Structure formats: C-alpha cells, structure tokens
Image 1 (cartoon, helix red, strand yellow):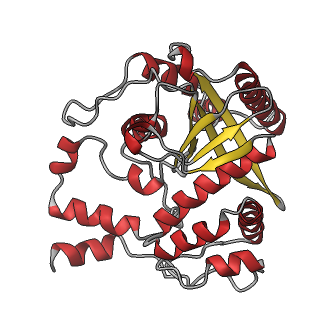
Image 2 (spheres, one colour):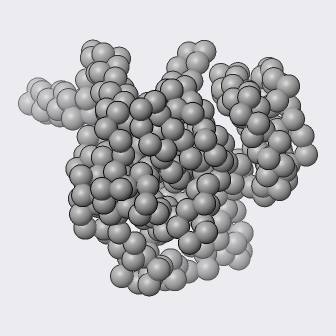
Length: 329
C-alpha cells in the first residue's frame, strides 16, 4: 500500500454533497449567485435556510448599492469555496456597516502603493474611513504558520493537509484544532495581508470576519493579545516580507455571523489602537459605536449562558465525582 493509499484510508473524504439541500429555498439573487461558478457543487452552500436567507439579504444590499453585477461577475471567476467565502465576508462586512448607519462612499478605493481596499465608508459626523476586510479561514489553520515549518513537512503530511482542505469544515465524530491558535492566526493574516494597503493620510480599519475552527470573537484574552501585537508584532523571522507595523491601523473590528433560530446574528469584538498615527486614528464617534456593539455582544452572551457552567467548572465537577467514586471503591 502506498503512502497516498494509506492516507486515503486514514482521512477519507466526506461524501460530496451536490449543492444546497433539497429543502432549502433559494431567493432569486442567490440563484443567480449559484448559476455557473467554478466552485458550484463543491460543497453544500448554502447549507440551511437561515444561511440562504442571510445570503439573499446581503446580495439584496449589494443590489441596492449597485455593486451586485461586479460581485456576481467576480463570483463566476472564483475558483474555490474558500475564495467564495472570502468575497462573501467582504460583502457581509459592508452590509453590517450599512446596517449600523455607515454609507458606502466607494468600492475598492485606492490604498497605499495603488493597492485596493474593500470600501471607503462614512459615518455621520466623521471623516471617511478606509476599510480592508480579511477572512482567516479554517483551511489555513491546518497549515503551520511559519515558512520554515511548512518546508519541513513531508510529502505525506502535505498530502494530508491538501486532502483535509477539500473536506467539510467539521467532520462527524472528529474533534480537531488548527496548528495555530485562532487569534495568532487571524492577526498574522492582518499583519501580512492588510497593513501594506493602509495610507498614512486617513483613518483605517481592518474588519476580520473569521471562519476559524474556533472563532476569535469572545475569546477572553483577545484584546490583550491584539494590544500586544500592536506594540510588538509577532513577525515570522523566516519571512522577509513579514515586516509591517501597525501605526497606520486605527483598530480591528472582529465579526462573527452566527445562526440563531431563524436569523443570523452578528457577534462583535473591537480593539482600538492607542498608538496609531493621528491622521489614521478612527473618529471618536466610530470608536464609540464599535465599543458599544462589542459591549452589547458581551452582555448578550453573558445572559445567554448565565446558567451554563464554564468548561473549568465542568472539569471541577467531573474530578469531584471521580474523587468520590475512588474513595467509595
């Protein structure tokens, strides 16, 4: 048996689901989205009615903004579900901002060095803000962060990672984690791929709509880690291109769309950069809004899980029962 055959037995590819489930009703704009893209039938997108309705709402927003034709054209050229999800993350971020009183001034504005961002937006009583959206995804989490570690992978290990990326995000009866913690991985994506686009002449924000195995939104240590990253970037010494710093970044807005019953709820976290260059700082009304949205999310989650014991509490109870059983035996 070859190494590849052994890997096939060890990591079987989940059965391919051809498009959305039969019971999911697609809106007219979502039907256009699913009409002929290269990624079609590679997964079950959209896998449930609540997500199908959310996609339709986002596409309707793009239609109102005159952005839908360009979005659909780009979607037809998009090769993989990973690229599709990244494009949808950009659209969802703009949709979320619009739902919170922001106006889209320009799509794909010019950034530093003629690089393009995702949107230029305005908020009442504040200057325009350059927006760059990133979606750190679970597929990237399965690969080592550093170039040196990736180069050390054996052929069998590389094949394992390659095959895993073609499967569904969550596999039945499988519990797994990425090779890097989601907060480290997310900020690595921001540092490598977003900072180079930011000008020193206007306010800038990066929006992270992560699709990690465990979302960064709600991690108790997220703010502390991001603040430390602002001060001392965790650069990869093996990567000469990993040299960017955060003085042009006003802050990071973290979003997690999450299905709740019949709707999709947007959970929010936000970390402002206190050491940003003055021209790049986010306007105070925007900082106030993002902070308020973060606090609303925190309060809602506390109420939602008020009667649910924490993981540490469950471990304590388990060990207490174990100790009782040991003494009685």
